[in-house]
Length: 79
Image (cartoon, one colour):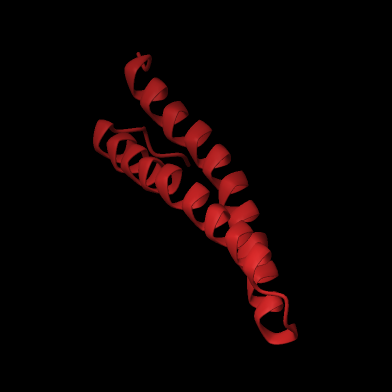
């Protein structure tokens, strides 16, 4: 059974979403700078790893944003 959405969980999800909204472009920017700087074998793999993590974080941020706003809207428009 689904438990009803509460305002507190919606606000917590919104705060996590805002943190991800700041963190994901930051990691992506660091990854692109690392790709431009590093040309050697061990460090380039770290740059590609950061790039993959950054892209996954951006996608998760979009998903989590929809989930956070849906929780808040469910609370507002319930009964």
